[in-house]
Length: 320
Image 1 (cartoon, rainbow, N blue to C red):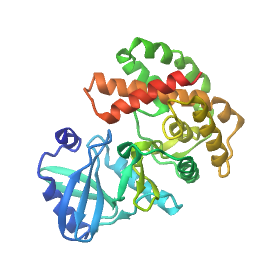
Image 2 (image 1 turned 180 degrees about the horizontal axis):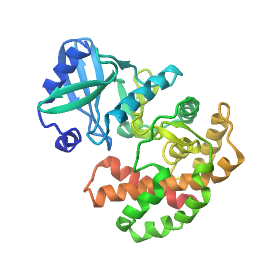
Image 3 (image 1 turned 90 degrees about the vertical axis):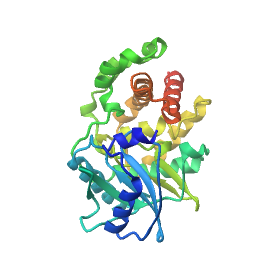
Image 4 (image 1 turned 60 degrees about the vertical axis):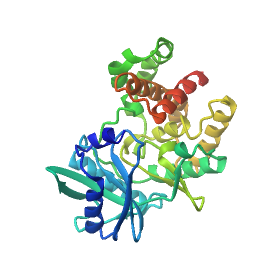
């Protein structure tokens, strides 16, 4: 499993040696231990422990350009400035983004505080109603940031439904395909470009939300943040954080309460509220489409992928 993650950065050497270099370059203290974090679809992440504490290290995937890496770091900085509960970033002499040259490879690195807790996917902990509203409030802060970073392509993003459906629909089970195919016309009718857009995290899901030992909730991983239709953030929240696969009424009430909380900061238009249910169904469709592709084409049998596949299937069938 570790080798799959190392392939993302084109490095198969000793992680301890990289860790010692990072300790030196970021002035983190003396190396004690390191451990790969085996979740996520994109980058290579690991925890790094020194005599001064514990840190989270992200090595950006080779699929990302240097500009992608810079924008990722920049949006975290902007989010911290407006009070979003995201981990603190650390600087080397190069800045927040550090280039490490090792074994003919160039590793693009950022370091931040390690949150002493577990994400909601790993812990399987229940997300309380208070947690949900807190995350919606954080989402509204993120969506209020006045930046428009260069676009990056995220194959799981709702905005890319048509392209991804064309490429991956062949892998769908017939029952799922029968539900998802009619969404093609519904997607076109939304007229995405006409909706209000803003900066969005784009991936506030269980794997990217951590509760620490002091019961504080943190939002991590801004790697697919983008300039999206404003309802993108709410739709992503609705297809996981706000979603109860066993109780349609609770899912609907959670969304209603989330809309009320969100609009304390950002008032949605009539059109946004009108198309939001379809947009949420498209979010579930993307989970099924992409997770099915991961499972069948890329042989991804991880618990994380299976979770999003199943929750997507449930969501498609719960929404009329």
